[in-house]
Length: 86
Length: 89
Image 1: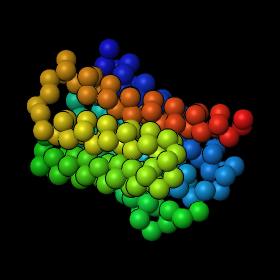
Image 2: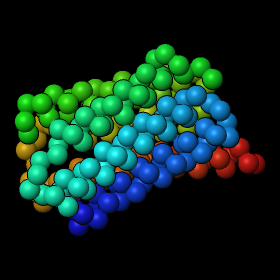
Image 3: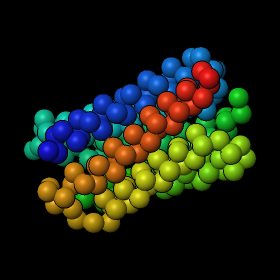
Image 4: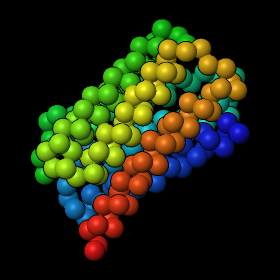
């Protein structure tokens, strides 16, 4: 069950990233770019989660995946604070 | 959970919470449900990350926390699809 949910998290976050970046290409609305980049990071976070929990259960990758998640959220926060207007 | 992981986990939860507030502000300014769905998605993320950080979860219970994350991504997909549909009308 767990590997399925972890895999689904990675797949759905990749869909989010693709949809947001696709929307940015059409609309050129900057917030969509920052959101898209954030979800690229969250996808990477979920891929490392699958590696951590399923592929390499003996190695603890929690610090790496949390660092990636933090970077992803910081990109979105940067966009929201400094660069959200059009 | 190591000390570094606990700090990082809290930082990500805080970032998600701050993001929630920004999207709530955009929703109040525009009344666009797109922003409300984004706010809801990041609120779910903040709660699930805080919950994972605060509890010692067993391997059996762990998928339940990640179902919340799945709900977050589902909401984002729903938000974009709703927006696309309303635009193409």
